[in-house]
Length: 118
Image 1 (cartoon, rainbow, N blue to C red):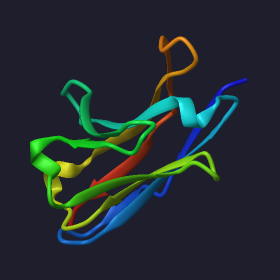
Image 2 (cartoon, rainbow, N blue to C red):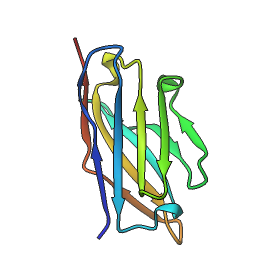
Image 3 (cartoon, rainbow, N blue to C red):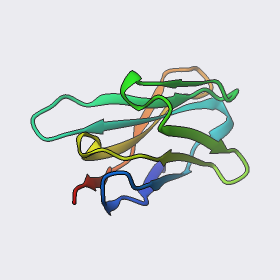
């Protein structure tokens, strides 16, 4: 059974930092690209950051220079370090795994709430 379990969300003041983690099980982690998405109330889900199975990264313009995605293949875990957080970063953050042996698998976590407010 495939599981993606996010953790690390919470309430933080503007300018603060949070580190999200997504622990995976049931997949061959090294065969998957991993992404972090977010969805704010009333808005569509959007890609925040992505990391390929080889470690190449891609970021949304709105988070470049503030967020860093990384992965630990030994722990089957992907991280999102979020610095200089802004109120507009408030959203539910979802972990995504895409790829696999045939490249056509797509899995999602349940999401973790990030709220940036004073």
